[in-house]
Image (cartoon, rainbow, N blue to C red):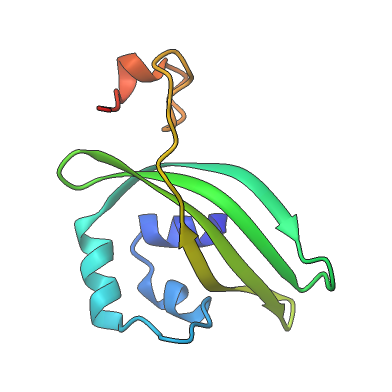
Length: 122
């Protein structure tokens, strides 16, 4: 999960394409548009779970913060499978935005309180 976030952040489209197994693949061109228009500024892993039947399945609940025309968040539960000792993204479910209090540490990792660094508009 963290490696895919880093790939989105550094615009490594080939890595993103090669670490997913989707029923309906995203085109390279569509992914390129998304990557170019989004600036990722923080990632918080909220929960991880291994599959009950096998160690080759897992899910990750996360929230990623980004800017395009303001600060936004992507809150998702992502599913992964492991093949040949590598994890692949298979699907995700969007979840409602999480509430962030103004006095929590900022999601960008600066060490400042969120209200002083990247205040969210609610």
